[in-house]
Amino acid sequence: MLVLTKGAVPYLGVQEAATLADDLRARPAFRHWIVDYFSPEIHKFRDRPAIKRGMPNAPWRFQPRDYDEFSYRRGGSGKRRDTSPSRRSG
Image (cartoon, rainbow, N blue to C red; front, side, top):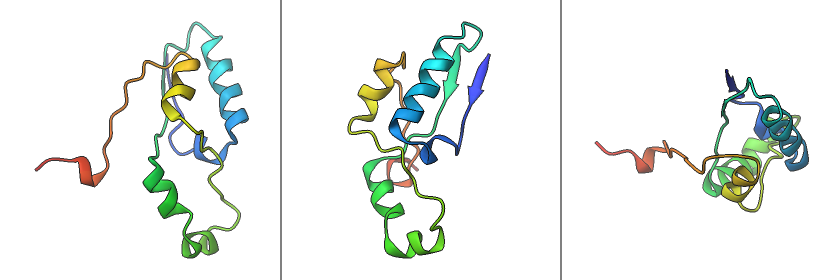
């Protein structure tokens, strides 16, 4: 079974996201989990005062020091696909 949490995890604290990841991993039926990845540059953009003023009740709280390590320690494959516009070819 696939679990898709697009748009949810950024609003969790790191410990809350860790608990979610651990809970999902403990269920054998949940074999795959798709979760958002936001680069440090995206977090900097999101932390701008104008954005914060526009969304004061929706801060992004999930900002682990090392995203790959966070994922790996919870069973992640380490596979990440960067789809930011600066990385796309064409």
